[in-house]
Image (cartoon, rainbow, N blue to C red; front, side, top):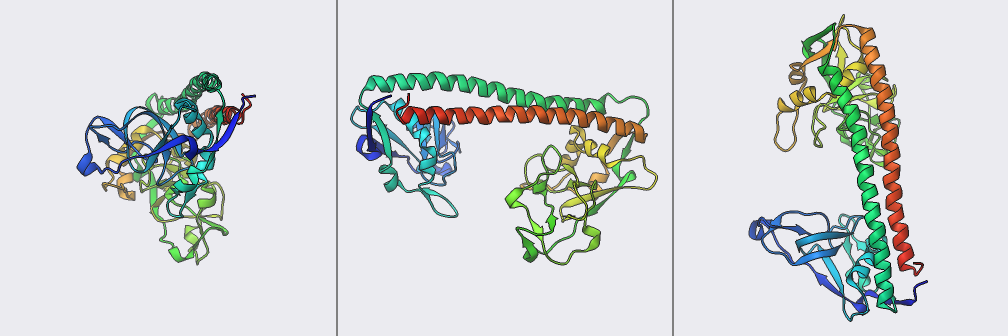
Length: 382
């Protein structure tokens, strides 16, 4: 048990505000500018080096972060430093990390959370009686955090490898195709129908019908449940725009990078609505086509690139049924072969998801371990 006192931050620390700068006037090329979040632009001067930054304006849940090297701190952030020699800077930095949630709770405002600095000054912190105790705790945390950082890097690499394995196999299916494959433009294989412009006054946060938007598409393809952000519709609904399970849709607006051309298979009948900016894809009569196979066709790099390159718009890119129809795709002219490929990709996809879930849990456990160690350190338990 470490012996010490609980005192307000202002009793033992100096609070140092960043300096307001603007890119047009102050921008340069050397040192990154930090504020309440990540780096924004660069300057040719710096005012901080190897410091823990606390968000002041525009706070997010991660409102404390250590920035390595030289940087310029703008007025959206602040730093604190020991005043009278009773605290080590490194010990203080770790303690601020441990108080992240308490600091975030001091944010005021609805549209943007800004730190209540006057209350922050009164926040109690633990000050051990002996500097040696602080050095010991810092040593323990340094070693533990180095180990956690290594474990986290390995887990993130394994997570990337799991995703890359599926992506590599998917691409190989369409580049190393065997006998019986043909190439045709999509316009000869399918029709693509625009969605309906549902009226915004009937959008709600709950209801019987989900209004699909590009936000329901993963960039890598597949349906995304938006949880509390899900949109529902309670107005009159044209029956032709109520979707069935297994329907294939493609995003025709790039709301986020990599989203354009992303496909989904509708997960349930009589629940999802075909909204504007989404294309409903239906095969032409007599075409050898199953939606589950062509879902993967739309996920190939070649098809996505052609859709993206032919799209229009600068900030937000858009495509159309006509432009998508010009894309030439490869496919086996056999339903059994298409089903066999779908089955193989399904098995590999499930294994990939299992591995992703495993590594995501490891990453979450490592984050919880950091929080636990910080709590022990600054409750006197270490």
